[in-house]
Structures are given as structure tokens and as C-alpha cells.
Image (cartoon, rainbow, N blue to C red; front, top):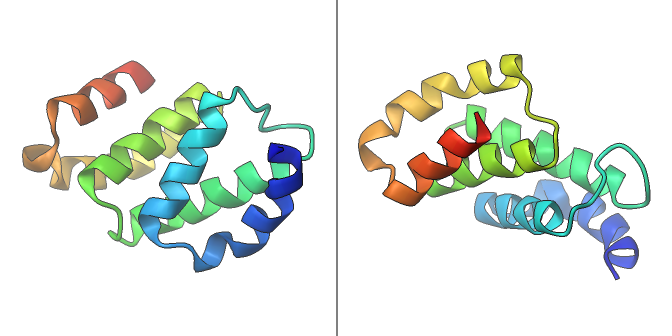
Amino acid sequence: MTAALSPVIAERAHKMQPQEVVNSLWAFSNLNIDPKQGPESVAVRRLVSEGLSRAHGDSLSPQGLSNLVWSMSVLGILDYDTLRSLAPGLESYAENFTYEAWLQIYMAH
């Protein structure tokens, strides 16, 4: 089913609300999708691109940013440079993170 939906998700990722982008990426990560191959890989790459763009544009909520980091980590595509580029957003939201959000970021690291 994810293979059938992936092209639609990839095509519409840029039109999604920030939370929809992160929730879709979170769903792919929970399904153990391989982000480097298979029909879902294009959708995952597009969602990551959109998620990072939204994170750098300050349009993600604290929970959304935390979910983005966690999802990328679970998918095995969170590297040090990417995490470091998200640091300003993580710092600016520090007071607003829930315990769950902090735990997700910690687990991702």
C-alpha cells in the first residue's frame, strides 16, 4: 500500500502543512521503509527535504521538529551535519519542548 501512495505523497509534499510533512515521515519511519531504495524512497527523500526546509524556515512546532529529528534518525538518514544545522531551532524551542520531545531528540542522538 505504501508503494502505491508514495508517488502521490512525493508529488504533494510541497503542498502539505508542516505537521502533515512530519507526520508522513514519522509514518514511513514506523513502517521501517528503506529510504535509499524501493518505491517509497522518493517520497521519503521529498518529505525529508520539505521537513528540513520547514525546520529552517521556523514553521515547525517544537513537537514537529522533534518528530522530524526522530524520524530521520530511525530511517538512518540523520547525520551530524544535519543535526547541527537544526541546532538553532532546537535551542529556540528548548523551553517549549515536552518531555516526549526531548526524549525523542535524545534517542535520535
